[in-house]
Image 1 (tube, helix red, strand yellow):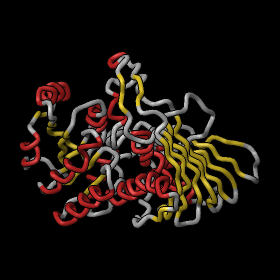
Image 2: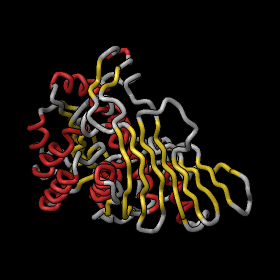
Image 3: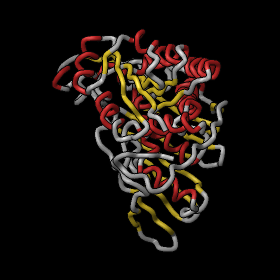
Image 4: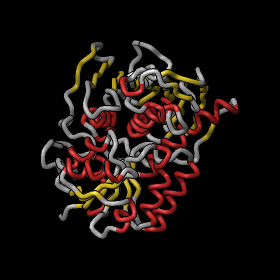
Length: 366
């Protein structure tokens, strides 16, 4: 099987991780990068041994099969659309878009062009969440009844070198961290049917305390605390909170409660973590060994997409899943403002689990 050739748009903070880990996968061949700051692209290209091209050059390149879109969230839909209209597959950082209208436009354009859309997060393909998926599929906790999902911090302005975009449209705790949590819930439990939520913007400004931006006033355009109930098509009800207004807490990240026990899901922003199981027949917690190595990290979604393209199979971190997550997040504010339940239109298929025995190194996924 030949390698699938990869180009990158956007060479900011997340780019080095994507580039480094892409070389763990036998199927991926990183070729070139582009950025609105071409000098920065040239520097990154030299650092990682690939080529620097302009955006237009990258879109016209015959030696690129998939373009990985690592631009800020506000540019995701625009760049994705340009990529698919250029006849190339696109894999983008989360979220898919800022609105369902834009997300739908991207998916429709890709279908018309005969190319694929992939989207982060690919943490659902890591050893931690894959282990949870296998435990659920094998019925260890019986029939899932309910779940909790909590992401609570006091925001990124104390550490991030450029925190302003976290508080602009497309940011906030829901759109920044929600994709990890909601994607995980959907991957484990299936599609969401209905959303009921309350959201608030707790302050119109925040003060950056990171070294690079110390003292800078950040204007807040989005909700900084979102609480909701997610009703899944299977009947599971999940309680969720996504907040940048919490200094400290003892909340779990994700737990799933079934008729036979409880499953503790590790941090969905990581690829490994500790999986715990409590069964009513045993009445004690036990740690569960991961199904495969947690060393396989960022770019696993790109690699899975590449192998799926070559084999003519479905890829797991697909546009339909990302659109469903986007529709779910959009429903939080809609529900809060309207004071009512929001029924979702999209009902994607739950992507397959990965095969057992995945190892770091010259990784093959299928």
